[in-house]
Amino acid sequence: MTPDPRAALARLVAALEGHLDVAANRRGEADPAVAAAYQRVAEAFEVYDDSLYSAYDEVTPLVLYDDVEDDRDDDEDDDAEDEDDDAEDDDDDADDDVVPGAPADSRR
Image (cartoon, rainbow, N blue to C red; front, side):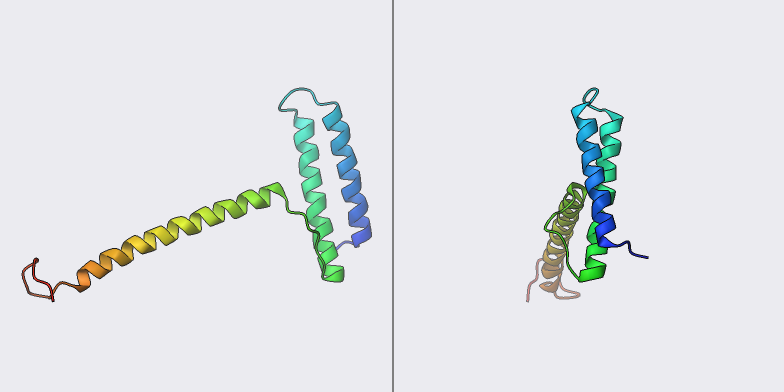
């Protein structure tokens, strides 16, 4: 069941306020309380965005940082696959010029 968008928004606002509180009282560079608050904001945002879409076929203009990183990783994977495919195509083209049974230096 998809939560009501207004209730999901209230949870998102509360998560943001909680994040502000722990960030203001941060204890060092890698404070686990800040990391946990960050995660709560991300989760609350996803619930809100999903409920908004389910109820009104609408989304926010925001993107989670992890989603951006995932998209970059996907793009890099796609680029690497394209380069592999191009290399295979080049190898295939060279084989097309050789006449079967002819010496290796023979071309059509």
